[in-house]
Image (tube, rainbow, N blue to C red; front, side, top):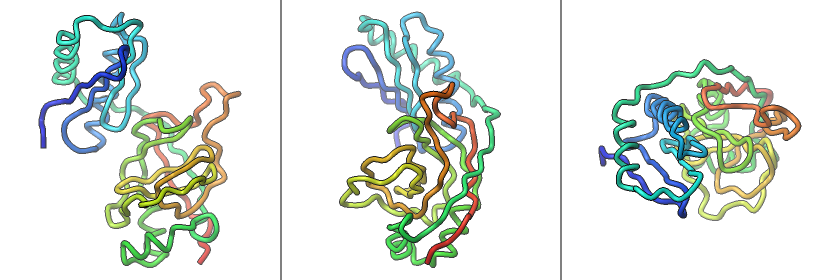
Amino acid sequence: MSTAPSISLLGTTALLFEAPGGMNLPSQQRIWALAREAERWPEVREAVPGMNNLMLSFTRAPRQLDALRMRLCEAWDVATALPREGRIVELPVVYGGEGGPHMADVMAHTGLGIDAIVELHSTPLYPVYALGSHPGYCYLGGMDPRIATPRRKVPVLSIPGGAVSIGGAQTGVSASAGPSGWNTIGTTSMVFFDPAQDPPAMLQPGDMIRFRVEGIVR
């Protein structure tokens, strides 16, 4: 596994910095620290943390790319984990049934029964690593590896907002209706994005999610 960051162009006015190593909270906290540092640079328009990566957009196309790459790598080398004291938000979830159409697939892959899957999924306190994919969607860390299930070979054309799903080693909750390649195991009534609110996204990086079992439909 590479120990050096990867930096690539996104069009002419953005860069993607990808941290080395796997996804974990200390590494993500360093991404948050790097974002805070980079957004102070005068040429940077926006610093957007992703899952183990950081996108920088610029007011104009950067001219000295090699110097910019070196500056980013140096900033990463000295970045220390930046904890965020966010909120703990409890989400009521109904597992299985029509709102969890892929629960059977997760059971088949893991060899676990529905009660064990629900217990393993609802026990952790999940940190919000980043927002992305669609407005209000949270990338979460901390899922128990025993319920990790590969993404679906054929994506579903549309899942509703509030769908609780597993994709690989991660879990997440859809903030709005749309296509998905993840395995939906339940649903919540929580609203994650409201353009009339400030900020419009209910959750921010550093917040924590706990799934509360509201019911299990077998």
